[in-house]
Length: 502
Ligand code: ADP
Ligand code: ADP
Ligand code: MG
Image (tube, rainbow, N blue to C red; front, side, top):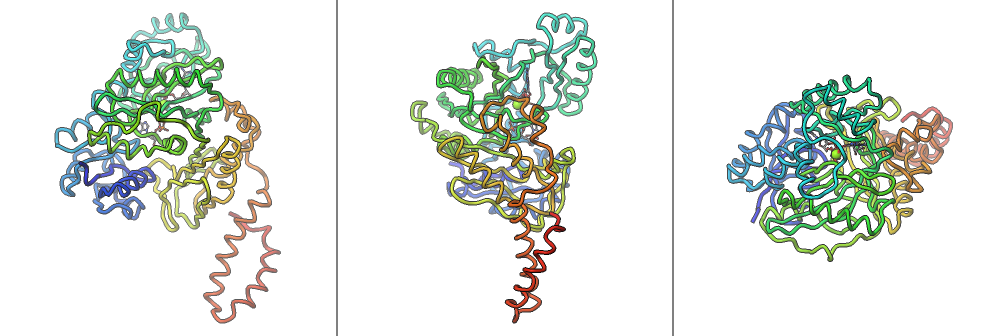
């Protein structure tokens, strides 16, 4: 049985994994790059080891160093989190070879699903519907043009090794094909070291709906229902919710069964996600499988009542799943928003820097998975996600109200964040009504623009935060006369509030 886990990651996900380990009585080991010396995951773990300079290629992607630390620290297993080495079959294999348990699927499953062309072929063989398109990389551009004419424009040119929304081009006109193929190719080469691209029919006004699956090492596979992830910016998820507002019980059952079939096709064990693209008539097609824990996994945990990291560890221990499909059900509604250190009102420019103040939202039905603290400097080297805010409500309407309440209370100063932008999303009629697809953001620009003035109530909390800070300082200066100064300064404060900036 696993006694000590090295978490080969950083940020919120490293802490999230360690939390479950702690509940299970499992010790944890953190690894960190030079800029992460003071990071929260280092503080949270039982042990922590430096692994190199800030660039991830010299630290979090260094398989040799991570394995060395695992041995040195006596860790018997490695959890890769998401990103970094989580979908690297060579790393999973190396762990196996070194006698360390890789908390994740088999190298074979990672390899097969990591290559979208191979995955498409595998799904077709398993009878799972895939997006119409090709199952070979484009070699000859003339032939590609013929194939595209056969499929019918618009199409997507997609990198076989793609991930994180990279290496993808939408082509609407015949004259754009050549350029789209070459730019998708070069982006794929630069990002993934592999320039294979293929063709998929473009599904218009699509929904991105994915199914969580769990499989053990004894051939049992279940799904934990869907997540709706259609609120996207540049093919990257911004808001996720479960259940999907467009799902019906019949389609859910069919898609769930296909998700299980997809996982079974690669003898899947561990936690994984089958992503589908769904059209307005609820026709669905396999998009890809992510062979790891997903950023948005907490909404499933909340609604289905399963700790996915605990399940991953149990599966890695060789234990059979504790539940069957019929034991699982959805309870209520959960929504997650991703909070980034970026400026939504300045083209989402990354906003690294020192956190000056943070008030985390609390209260009934609120979960906050983050890693930032006052005085912490968000480094510029990694994904600028600061935290995830997850809420639960009995109904979708309750969940939205709760999320708005939590966003209202969530204050971060020092860096710009996407909090105000997320708040605006929650006010868009199409979101409130649950009528949205992946074009949601582009179609609702008018609601998502920066507001000239902060709303009165939003101003109040920020202003009070600053005022409390001011009073605290004042009390430190005048320890024996806080009352008098407090009174006077309220008045001053009232006059000055219009010029306060946050
Ligand atoms: P999710 O579906 O969980 O949101 P994403 O595709 O957004 O998955 O990726 C999750 C994390 O993994 C992000 O931090 C992203 O930057 C990173 N990531 C995804 N694909 C790759 C890849 N091929 N190489 C490196 N990092 C990746
Ligand atoms: P990644 O590996 O980068 O996550 P995906 O294949 O999962 O790439 O696609 C990411 C997003 O791009 C989808 O959620 C969807 O919004 C859009 N997309 C991908 N393929 C298509 C398609 N064939 N038609 C329409 N939209 C697509
Ligand atoms: Mg995807």
